[in-house]
Amino acid sequence: MLENEANPTISKSTGLPRKRFYRARAHSNPLSDSHFPVPISPSHVDFSLHFPQFSCEVSCIKKVQFADIGCGFGGLLISLSTFFPETLMIGMELRDKVAEYVKERILGLRATNPGQYQNVSVVRTNSMKYIPNYFEKGQLTKMFFLFPDPHFKEKNHRRRVISPHLLDEYAHVLEVGGIIYTITDVEELGEWMKTCLDNHPMFEALTEQELQADPAVKLLSTATEEGQKVARNGGQTFQAVYRRIALSL
Image (cartoon, rainbow, N blue to C red; front, side, top):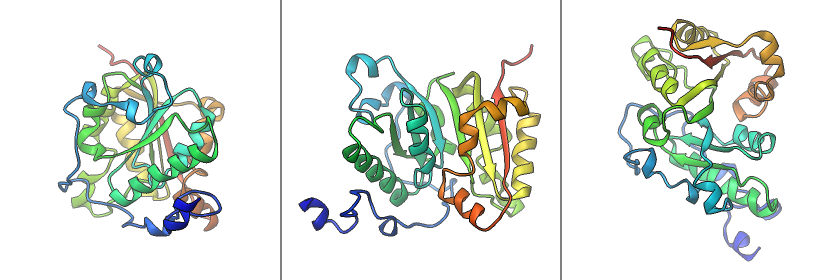
Protein backbone atom coordinates (compact mmCIF):
# COMPACT_ATOMS: atom_id res chain seq x y z
CA MET A 1 0.00 0.00 0.00
CA LEU A 2 2.84 2.38 0.81
CA GLU A 3 4.21 1.73 -2.67
CA ASN A 4 0.89 2.72 -4.23
CA GLU A 5 0.74 5.89 -2.14
CA ALA A 6 4.17 6.85 -3.42
CA ASN A 7 3.27 6.01 -7.00
CA PRO A 8 0.55 8.32 -8.37
CA THR A 9 0.14 6.20 -11.52
CA ILE A 10 -1.40 3.39 -9.41
CA SER A 11 -4.91 3.68 -7.97
CA LYS A 12 -4.95 3.31 -4.17
CA SER A 13 -8.39 1.70 -4.21
CA THR A 14 -7.90 -0.90 -6.97
CA GLY A 15 -4.14 -1.33 -7.19
CA LEU A 16 -4.45 -0.92 -10.97
CA PRO A 17 -2.70 1.65 -13.17
CA ARG A 18 -4.49 4.92 -13.91
CA LYS A 19 -5.02 5.18 -17.64
CA ARG A 20 -4.58 8.95 -17.76
CA PHE A 21 -0.88 8.54 -17.01
CA TYR A 22 -0.42 6.23 -20.00
CA ARG A 23 -2.21 8.12 -22.76
CA ALA A 24 -0.61 8.03 -26.19
CA ARG A 25 -1.46 8.76 -29.79
CA ALA A 26 -4.33 6.65 -31.09
CA HIS A 27 -2.03 4.93 -33.59
CA SER A 28 1.62 4.70 -34.56
CA ASN A 29 3.28 4.40 -37.94
CA PRO A 30 4.05 0.66 -38.27
CA LEU A 31 6.57 1.30 -41.05
CA SER A 32 8.82 3.53 -38.95
CA ASP A 33 11.78 2.13 -37.07
CA SER A 34 11.31 1.72 -33.33
CA HIS A 35 13.95 0.80 -30.80
CA PHE A 36 13.13 -2.28 -28.75
CA PRO A 37 14.63 -5.76 -28.55
CA VAL A 38 13.47 -8.26 -31.17
CA PRO A 39 14.07 -12.01 -30.81
CA ILE A 40 16.02 -13.67 -33.59
CA SER A 41 13.49 -16.51 -33.80
CA PRO A 42 10.66 -18.05 -31.75
CA SER A 43 13.17 -20.29 -29.99
CA HIS A 44 14.82 -17.17 -28.58
CA VAL A 45 11.62 -15.94 -26.89
CA ASP A 46 11.58 -16.72 -23.16
CA PHE A 47 7.87 -16.79 -22.45
CA SER A 48 8.53 -18.04 -18.91
CA LEU A 49 9.25 -14.39 -18.07
CA HIS A 50 5.68 -13.57 -19.12
CA PHE A 51 3.99 -16.47 -17.35
CA PRO A 52 6.03 -17.05 -14.16
CA GLN A 53 3.33 -18.98 -12.32
CA PHE A 54 3.44 -21.81 -14.83
CA SER A 55 5.94 -24.41 -13.71
CA CYS A 56 8.99 -25.15 -15.84
CA GLU A 57 7.57 -28.52 -16.78
CA VAL A 58 4.37 -26.92 -18.05
CA SER A 59 5.80 -23.77 -19.62
CA CYS A 60 8.39 -25.77 -21.54
CA ILE A 61 5.57 -27.68 -23.20
CA LYS A 62 2.70 -25.19 -23.18
CA LYS A 63 2.93 -22.47 -25.81
CA VAL A 64 1.16 -19.20 -26.45
CA GLN A 65 -1.95 -19.90 -28.53
CA PHE A 66 -3.78 -16.55 -28.70
CA ALA A 67 -2.32 -13.28 -30.00
CA ASP A 68 -4.10 -9.92 -29.77
CA ILE A 69 -2.47 -7.74 -32.42
CA GLY A 70 -2.45 -4.07 -31.48
CA CYS A 71 -3.97 -4.95 -28.11
CA GLY A 72 -4.51 -1.35 -26.98
CA PHE A 73 -5.25 -1.07 -23.27
CA GLY A 74 -5.77 -4.82 -22.91
CA GLY A 75 -9.54 -5.07 -22.52
CA LEU A 76 -9.88 -8.07 -24.79
CA LEU A 77 -6.93 -9.87 -23.22
CA ILE A 78 -8.36 -9.47 -19.72
CA SER A 79 -11.73 -10.82 -20.84
CA LEU A 80 -10.22 -13.73 -22.75
CA SER A 81 -8.06 -14.63 -19.77
CA THR A 82 -11.07 -15.65 -17.69
CA PHE A 83 -12.92 -17.29 -20.60
CA PHE A 84 -9.88 -19.45 -21.46
CA PRO A 85 -7.93 -19.78 -18.16
CA GLU A 86 -5.76 -22.65 -19.39
CA THR A 87 -4.68 -20.95 -22.61
CA LEU A 88 -1.58 -18.76 -22.78
CA MET A 89 -2.19 -15.51 -24.66
CA ILE A 90 -0.21 -12.40 -25.41
CA GLY A 91 -0.95 -8.88 -26.57
CA MET A 92 1.34 -7.19 -29.06
CA GLU A 93 1.41 -3.38 -28.91
CA LEU A 94 3.69 -0.89 -30.66
CA ARG A 95 3.07 2.16 -28.45
CA ASP A 96 5.41 2.04 -25.46
CA LYS A 97 3.18 3.84 -22.94
CA VAL A 98 0.20 1.69 -23.82
CA ALA A 99 2.22 -1.54 -23.59
CA GLU A 100 3.51 -0.44 -20.19
CA TYR A 101 -0.05 0.25 -19.03
CA VAL A 102 -1.17 -3.25 -20.03
CA LYS A 103 1.81 -4.76 -18.25
CA GLU A 104 1.01 -2.87 -15.03
CA ARG A 105 -2.68 -3.69 -15.38
CA ILE A 106 -1.96 -7.41 -15.58
CA LEU A 107 0.44 -7.29 -12.63
CA GLY A 108 -2.17 -5.41 -10.61
CA LEU A 109 -4.90 -7.91 -11.48
CA ARG A 110 -2.63 -10.81 -10.55
CA ALA A 111 -1.88 -9.20 -7.18
CA THR A 112 -5.53 -8.50 -6.33
CA ASN A 113 -6.89 -11.76 -7.77
CA PRO A 114 -4.56 -14.57 -6.64
CA GLY A 115 -4.40 -17.42 -9.10
CA GLN A 116 -6.05 -15.46 -11.92
CA TYR A 117 -4.68 -13.66 -14.99
CA GLN A 118 -1.51 -15.75 -14.91
CA ASN A 119 -2.10 -16.82 -18.51
CA VAL A 120 -1.99 -13.37 -20.09
CA SER A 121 0.86 -11.00 -20.89
CA VAL A 122 1.98 -8.26 -23.27
CA VAL A 123 5.03 -7.46 -25.37
CA ARG A 124 5.99 -4.21 -27.05
CA THR A 125 6.75 -4.97 -30.66
CA ASN A 126 5.79 -4.23 -34.24
CA SER A 127 3.63 -7.18 -35.22
CA MET A 128 3.57 -6.11 -38.87
CA LYS A 129 7.30 -6.78 -39.02
CA TYR A 130 8.07 -9.39 -36.38
CA ILE A 131 5.25 -11.93 -36.10
CA PRO A 132 7.50 -14.75 -37.40
CA ASN A 133 10.11 -13.84 -34.78
CA TYR A 134 7.70 -14.74 -31.98
CA PHE A 135 5.63 -17.69 -33.18
CA GLU A 136 6.40 -20.98 -34.83
CA LYS A 137 4.57 -22.38 -37.83
CA GLY A 138 1.05 -23.42 -36.82
CA GLN A 139 1.51 -22.34 -33.20
CA LEU A 140 -1.48 -20.01 -32.78
CA THR A 141 -5.14 -21.00 -32.60
CA LYS A 142 -6.59 -17.48 -32.51
CA MET A 143 -5.47 -14.05 -33.73
CA PHE A 144 -7.38 -10.86 -32.99
CA PHE A 145 -7.34 -7.56 -34.91
CA LEU A 146 -9.77 -5.24 -33.14
CA PHE A 147 -10.39 -1.69 -34.39
CA PRO A 148 -7.08 -1.33 -36.26
CA ASP A 149 -5.89 1.97 -37.73
CA PRO A 150 -7.91 2.51 -40.95
CA HIS A 151 -5.15 4.47 -42.73
CA PHE A 152 -7.73 6.25 -44.86
CA LYS A 153 -5.41 7.64 -47.52
CA GLU A 154 -4.86 5.23 -50.40
CA LYS A 155 -1.10 5.81 -50.32
CA ASN A 156 -1.14 4.54 -46.71
CA HIS A 157 -3.11 1.34 -47.34
CA ARG A 158 0.20 -0.54 -47.23
CA ARG A 159 0.25 0.28 -43.50
CA ARG A 160 -2.96 -1.64 -42.87
CA VAL A 161 -2.52 -4.60 -40.55
CA ILE A 162 -4.73 -6.78 -42.76
CA SER A 163 -3.33 -7.06 -46.29
CA PRO A 164 -2.70 -9.87 -48.78
CA HIS A 165 1.01 -10.24 -47.99
CA LEU A 166 0.53 -10.02 -44.21
CA LEU A 167 -2.18 -12.68 -44.39
CA ASP A 168 0.53 -15.00 -45.72
CA GLU A 169 2.44 -14.48 -42.46
CA TYR A 170 -0.67 -14.91 -40.33
CA ALA A 171 -1.50 -18.13 -42.17
CA HIS A 172 2.02 -19.36 -41.40
CA VAL A 173 1.69 -18.94 -37.62
CA LEU A 174 -1.95 -20.09 -37.40
CA GLU A 175 -2.70 -23.77 -37.16
CA VAL A 176 -5.09 -25.29 -39.67
CA GLY A 177 -8.49 -24.65 -38.12
CA GLY A 178 -7.22 -21.56 -36.27
CA ILE A 179 -9.39 -18.45 -36.33
CA ILE A 180 -8.63 -14.86 -37.29
CA TYR A 181 -10.99 -12.23 -35.85
CA THR A 182 -11.34 -8.68 -37.21
CA ILE A 183 -13.70 -5.84 -36.33
CA THR A 184 -13.85 -2.13 -37.17
CA ASP A 185 -16.30 0.74 -37.09
CA VAL A 186 -15.08 1.98 -40.50
CA GLU A 187 -17.20 0.38 -43.22
CA GLU A 188 -14.61 0.81 -45.98
CA LEU A 189 -11.94 -0.87 -43.83
CA GLY A 190 -14.36 -3.64 -42.95
CA GLU A 191 -14.92 -4.30 -46.65
CA TRP A 192 -11.16 -4.16 -47.26
CA MET A 193 -10.41 -6.77 -44.58
CA LYS A 194 -13.25 -9.02 -45.70
CA THR A 195 -12.11 -8.81 -49.33
CA CYS A 196 -8.50 -9.60 -48.41
CA LEU A 197 -9.62 -12.66 -46.45
CA ASP A 198 -12.11 -13.79 -49.11
CA ASN A 199 -9.40 -13.63 -51.76
CA HIS A 200 -6.79 -15.51 -49.75
CA PRO A 201 -6.65 -19.24 -50.54
CA MET A 202 -5.90 -20.23 -46.93
CA PHE A 203 -8.90 -18.63 -45.21
CA GLU A 204 -12.64 -19.27 -45.28
CA ALA A 205 -15.45 -17.42 -43.50
CA LEU A 206 -17.14 -18.95 -40.49
CA THR A 207 -20.80 -19.77 -40.90
CA GLU A 208 -23.44 -17.84 -38.97
CA GLN A 209 -23.99 -20.88 -36.77
CA GLU A 210 -20.28 -21.07 -35.97
CA LEU A 211 -20.17 -17.36 -35.14
CA GLN A 212 -23.07 -17.74 -32.73
CA ALA A 213 -21.36 -20.65 -30.96
CA ASP A 214 -17.94 -18.95 -30.57
CA PRO A 215 -17.62 -17.16 -27.18
CA ALA A 216 -14.74 -15.03 -28.48
CA VAL A 217 -17.00 -13.45 -31.13
CA LYS A 218 -19.23 -12.01 -28.43
CA LEU A 219 -16.26 -10.12 -26.97
CA LEU A 220 -15.22 -8.39 -30.19
CA SER A 221 -17.53 -5.41 -29.83
CA THR A 222 -17.74 -5.22 -26.02
CA ALA A 223 -14.36 -5.96 -24.46
CA THR A 224 -12.28 -3.06 -25.77
CA GLU A 225 -12.34 0.65 -25.03
CA GLU A 226 -12.88 1.35 -28.74
CA GLY A 227 -15.81 -1.06 -28.98
CA GLN A 228 -17.46 0.40 -25.91
CA LYS A 229 -17.06 3.92 -27.33
CA VAL A 230 -18.70 2.87 -30.60
CA ALA A 231 -21.59 1.32 -28.66
CA ARG A 232 -22.08 4.45 -26.55
CA ASN A 233 -22.26 6.56 -29.70
CA GLY A 234 -24.68 4.18 -31.38
CA GLY A 235 -22.22 3.35 -34.14
CA GLN A 236 -22.02 0.32 -36.41
CA THR A 237 -19.32 -2.32 -36.44
CA PHE A 238 -18.18 -4.56 -39.27
CA GLN A 239 -16.58 -7.86 -38.42
CA ALA A 240 -14.93 -10.60 -40.43
CA VAL A 241 -14.10 -13.92 -38.79
CA TYR A 242 -12.26 -16.53 -40.85
CA ARG A 243 -10.79 -19.98 -40.40
CA ARG A 244 -7.32 -21.00 -41.52
CA ILE A 245 -7.64 -23.87 -43.97
CA ALA A 246 -5.13 -26.09 -45.70
CA LEU A 247 -3.93 -24.91 -49.07
CA SER A 248 -5.64 -26.83 -51.86
CA LEU A 249 -3.20 -28.43 -54.29
